[in-house]
Length: 414
Ligand SMILES: Cc1cc2nc3c(=O)[nH]c(=O)nc-3n(C[C@H](O)[C@H](O)[C@H](O)COP(=O)(O)OP(=O)(O)OC[C@H]3O[C@@H](n4cnc5c(N)ncnc54)[C@H](O)[C@@H]3O)c2cc1C
Image (cartoon, rainbow, N blue to C red):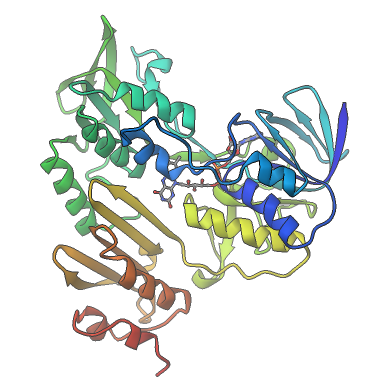
């Protein structure tokens, strides 16, 4: 059976589910189809490395929108169905259930996939990755008291999983190829707070270390590390970054550049096809049109709202500062803006162990802020710094550094 949708959306994750509903809210009256390969109702990914694994009760996904929401909005939600090919000439999508679907306009919101690591001597299906609920469930089951977990990659997902595995009573070793954890996008001062907290919880680190080979004997893995260690592990999980899901777009001839290349209206090189979220590479006006591909929950939520408006024919300006957070143990770390745009760093103590770093460009603009502390202790000041970043402000560094001065005073027009 063949169907036609005036708007088709590929990928029913954060961007796909939200933008389909947003189109309806904005008054789009035509037919909408949402194609999602995951069999579950659309759900949030951030809890999967955190509460979903550590909760005492049986884990449940945090639903973004229910079947009833889609039915009420008259959205034809195809769950458990993947888009396999895209024919731009005929304006149709080939689906995994054998159907084809015609479209008027298309949004690709296919997200990203974990980068895989082949370990010589270890069967690929023995190496866990995390992107969806089924994989999170497998990890939750594997993280048991006394078991040995090798986490490969000291980035956000790896470290959140290390924290969750410790909370479940497993022993954890983190193996990081670079000279420190969180090297991409997090200042060394914050990374060292994170590392100290992990060490306090009993996590063991091997930095500047790669895996030379492995072996599995009687259900246990043995990893030969480049630092000379022979590491025993019951569970191996890899968190070494993600790659954008661009396969369909690339095969269909759309412009690709570390993601699906879109303009400032989230339009691809085909005027009838849009892309947003983890899979899209877009120009950011706050950073002089620098192209970015973000893997962040809030960016996905904001992209969904903006791309829906752009698909309705509005001219949108997406200028939100990039922002993400990570929860590990009692600590929350947050980063807003782009740290590599900064030349100098100003430290602002906030009280207790909490602190904020302001990253300033040579012309005095604040281009990023990063902070860490227990619970929401860094949230307020980080939010204020984020507003300065978005407005390309040049706050006085002395006031920024002074914990007695409110950052709000810096937001007032001079
Ligand atoms: C474990 C984990 C923890 C995270 N924690 C944080 C955090 O603490 N803070 C933060 O800021 N961000 C976090 N993120 C990142 C954030 O969740 C993502 O950036 C966001 O979900 C991206 O939204 P998206 O819609 O682009 O992609 P997704 O939410 O991944 O949605 C894409 C969907 O498309 C589907 N799909 C792909 N290809 C096809 C196809 N051909 N046909 C049909 N369907 C397809 C996928 O199955 C998926 O459901 C985390 C991500 C993960 C995986």
